[in-house]
Image (cartoon, rainbow, N blue to C red; front, side, top):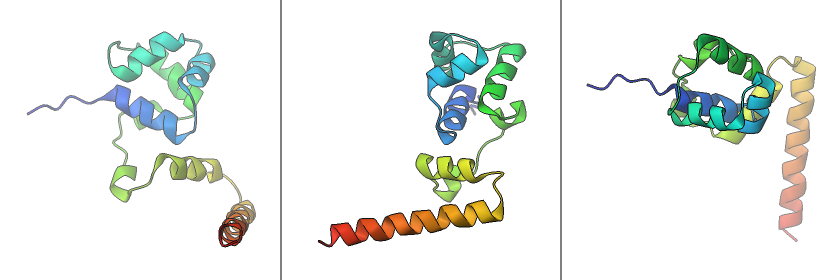
Length: 115
């Protein structure tokens, strides 16, 4: 039985959920884009210090890297995860405003599509 954990895939997932590019993460973590790409592909292994820099760059904990996300079980796509991440930490009033804007945008789109 293969119990190997794919930390590179998890880094990619966390990065995408936050709407970040490899370039943005590597710049924030003060590492090269090439090295970060190697980490996501699993062809390089980070030190704890480097992993901590990457986690700080993405505003996640090291534990988040090694915690299997249940978003796939819920069927939440990357764009929806970006929206959820953006709303995280916002007040209820801000969330309600965002929801109203989204509803208005869809109404306008549906109105334009019906023309």
